[in-house]
Amino acid sequence: MSVATFVSSLDEWIDNHTRRSYASPGALASGLYPRLTRQTPALELLDAELVDVADGRNDRLMWFMPPQEGKSQRVSRWFPLWMLMRDPSLRIVIASYEFNTARRWGRAIRNEIKTHPELGLRIKAGTGAANEWELEGSDGGIYTVGVGGALTGRPADLVIIDDPVKGRKEADSETARADCKEWWQETVNARLGDHTPVVLIMTRWHEDDLAGWLQTEHPGEWRVINVPALADHDPAKGETDPLGRDPGEWLTSARGRTPASWERRRTNFGARGFQALCQGQPSPDEGNVFKRGAWRYYATPMWSDQPDGSKLVLDVEQVIQSWDMTFKDTKGTDYVVGTVWAQRGAEAFLLDRVKARLNFPATCEALRLLTKLWPQATTKLVEDKANGSAVMAQLRTQVGGMIAVNPRDSKLERANAVSPFVEAGNVWLPGKTIALWVEDFVDEMAAFPNGTHDDQVDSTTQALDRLLLRRPSRGSAMTFAGRVA
Image (tube, rainbow, N blue to C red; front, side, top):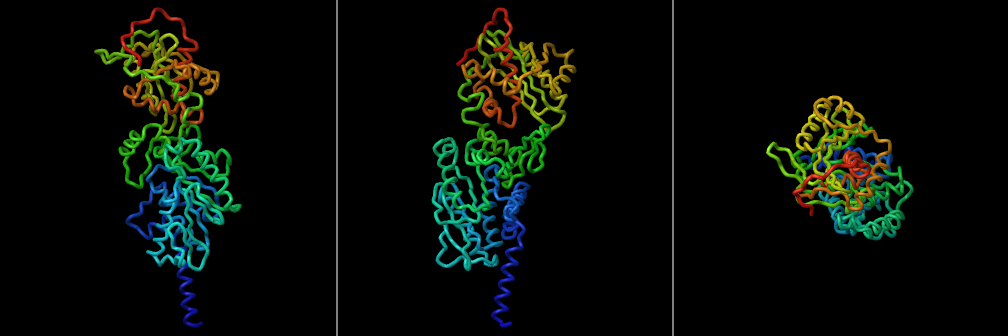
């Protein structure tokens, strides 16, 4: 063997050995930048899913995760580079909501290749533009495009779509969503082979975004993994967390966020924003059964604070509590929800709400405290399921007025029965200046029947059924000193 042949063979062996020495995109990032790369449980799982894509076990992956937790770096930077190390002939397309964003990923990957010749890859001369380049000795390389951009004559061996929607404004635009879907159908699909892998990562601003639409149009074709910031699953319903967390456990953050900083983000984003951005659970714009814009709001409290700490409501016919206690005595189940409502004529007013994951003793205590706070709420409706009956048995000699409710209709039928009162403007909620939790309440109602939780829905429909559908005749109304805005 000549020296030249030996050197060539040695170079080829080194190149191949280097390309195969990293087990995952995250391992590549950690190998090159060990002090800068943070590997969290979520990113470990993402690595495993990307390896499955690379090995042909899955060719359609959707991945949702809170913003700024490393998903774009892992998927749009390290994954393409890792794939090219495995197979330099791959033609990879990276798309984002605008061309310049996609081009930044092409530039970042190109710069890594130039900075690290030990990776065994070289940029072909004359093809080094940030948005489009090829590898030396191969047709493989990177092509970047904005959503809506052309891919004519660009066959793809791997397509990565990273945030096809810029933000809330575009997501809420029916025209923008239609344009994105059309781009997928007429541009991306035309470049795909039978098993060309596609990885889609995005912020879920809207339920009918590209991800939601694809799941509806092609059910079962995509592997969909949503990693919420806050584990919010219900084991009692057979639900699991992709990371194996307990309900109420925050995501281990690549940015070092603490539970307190996650809570601040939840407050800053607002209930609807947090559910979409951090939980991957966008709620409908208008709502399905309960329309967002149909609720009415009162601007000043309808109650006065009494010297003993209780609250007094005047000029109403009745005040009631309504409880949904469909839980088991474990941490990982639905919420316990108690609501307080007042009725005046054909109108119902939400006054207060308790929502928490509570065990049996804590639920009993919550009912006692709400009774002490609102002594006028002599009627206490308790859905007679799970621990509801046990709570009533435990407190019957301590708390009066508990009435077992045994609904015969389905949740959806009960909601449909009372939703006309909401649509007609007969149901009032406290404004945000009075109750910070009201946005969360409206979001859950709007998401029904497709939302993750429906405990507030159950409590509300139970109350409105009593107050507005089957309201018993009452005596004279009490005097009301407040004012509704």
